[in-house]
Image 1 (cartoon, helix red, strand yellow):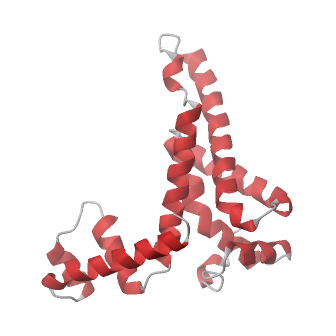
Image 2 (tube, one colour; image 1 turned 60 degrees about the vertical axis):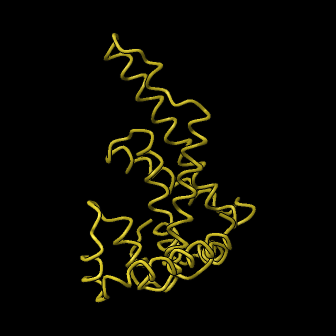
Length: 196
């Protein structure tokens, strides 16, 4: 279950349906691309449950193993994103329960109920992770210029001033707002087409 073929980008534009078919036909590079596509989604869920990076990596491996073992049973490849989020949530919930029991044994003075995630909160975690994944996929469909602009404006910490964004993109400062607006319109249209 390595991701050695993900870097070549051959499968980047493939739909989930096409990737699943290729995986089922034994295409290791398609498997790598599939895992690479959903890497952030899978990792984000245990992190939201409070897992350490090491525990999140263990949960990631468990989700990948389950995906590998049960991919043939997936009824509709279009439901893959939701299925992965559900499996990651279940694995994270089981980790949280185990962590809670261990903490309960070690720290008797802490209210253990504070460590639990309610079922409604778990659904919120899944929804947020699925929306985050859809946003990532939609952004990947934008032009390279829009991708870079969105990355610089919304995902750089600390936030960059327009002057620095303009310098990095080789644009006039006054054009940033207009181009940003067009990029966000394209992103919104792409998300709408994806059912967001």
